[in-house]
Amino acid sequence: MKYSKATNYALHTMMYLVASETNKPVGVQQLADKQDVSPTYLSKILTKLVKAGLIESASGAGGGYRLKGRREDVSFLEIIHAVEGTASLFDCCGNTHSQCAIHRVMLASEEAMEQKLRDTKMIELADALPRK
Amino acid sequence: MKYSKATNYALHTMMYLVASETNKPVGVQQLADKQDVSPTYLSKILTKLVKAGLIESASGAGGGYRLKGRREDVSFLEIIHAVEGTASLFDCCGNTHSQCAIHRVMLASEEAMEQKLRDTKMIELADALPRK
DNA sequence: CAATCGCGGACTTTATGTATCTATAATAGT
DNA sequence: ACTATTATAGATACATAAAGTCCGCGATTG
Image (cartoon, helix red, strand yellow):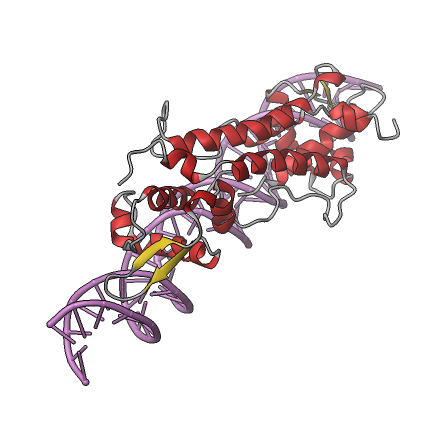
């Protein structure tokens, strides 16, 4: 069980956008350069963030990606859910309204992790960085 | 990102062993029947639990698997680690002693989940079941 | 119109999970 | 000692998903 690399790329990109002073669109080429990843692949990932409403895109010359919502509100969990999906990590005994005790424990532990990720905002880390 | 089915099988098998009254070895055939999984595949998974020291095996007629340590001590985390491995879920910027702030957050959230899984013992759920 | 840039689909490659089969080794009962 | 039983390990097959590329379309700017 591993997070995909896409999640890593998404988190770092969002960190960059949150930490960025201006709200001008940033091209995917520039974002990709910083992470040693191909622009076309990164754009696929960023499209997910667009659909999740975290960022918005502008086509055409001078276009790119920029934050959509408030800088202060972006949490780790939102980003991860946008990329990895929101399904539970644990599939059990054909679970719907599972009465399985094991399943309940697994869900609870997962929720503990999500709570931490929901509580941690990108901006908390961005503030520790030099603003650009 | 998903837990493997193997983890599910391992958890259910351990639950069965912890909830079981006697400490007689149980054959993999019997354990597999209860979970609708092939015996040979399940045995592969159980071998991991053996190597992790959670259960012990007895070859030959009348053999099988039984708990090794104390029934009260078996935690969810031990089982999961035995099957999934203990590596971190999140790989970042070539992390060793990572100074990456994102990485630290991801580790902390993971730790929150593991803490829950470490604190929850199999026997807590087994006690709620009818002993066999 | 032309250059730029994101979007979407199709595709390839690689890795991992899931599972089966078979041979081997260990043990118990006769 | 022989046989039935049972776990272990290796090879193999298959399915699925991650990771990444390629290309054409549409939108925007100048």
